[in-house]
Length: 243
Image 1 (cartoon, rainbow, N blue to C red):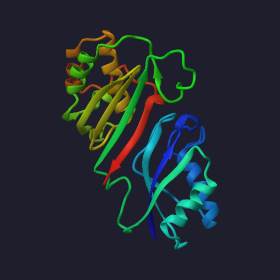
Image 2 (image 1 turned 45 degrees about the vertical axis):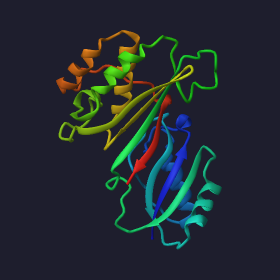
Image 3 (image 1 turned 180 degrees about the horizontal axis):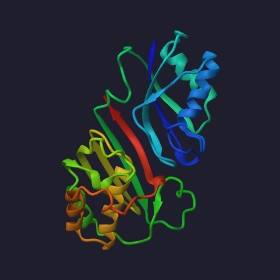
Image 4 (image 1 turned 90 degrees about the vertical axis):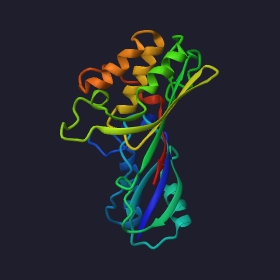
């Protein structure tokens, strides 16, 4: 039986989604609970990775189980054993052909930046920056990313050069909410660091550090070394995965 699970997590205390040697991960924490439940190793497959300190409101993963539990019972069992920083929001029994990664059609990420430097409680959940930002120029710069492009300039320089860098961005919205600047980015998929690099580039335009036209030049260059900007992970949230 295959389960599709929607999960939220506070990424501030984890070294990202994927299991790794250097620290604890979301994937590792969930698989540890499933191992206890099944008395054997159970592999989960996520819709994609999130980096260290990145949060999720609705990450999706799937796994196979022989326990035969109904959806609500599985949800309760997982939440009873997981740390409170990880909460299962929904469990669905799906076809054995469902794949959390390959069947995903669109993802949405949100990024939060606050100018409130006096609040010590937001630093794990928003980027803090006191600079005044030029909203109109940021919107103009963000519009360059809309549509289908080769995003070689806006991904990790370590990414395999054989990997397809073509992605389609369907939404890049910037909202001002009192002292918070809220970025909303949706597309058919994202390369490693792509969202954080795009957001920080737009922020640099807002600060007046680079010109609007430079963003298009960077995108058109398709050069993995040309963009030196990457927003801090704490302000980034995986908000939705659409199937």
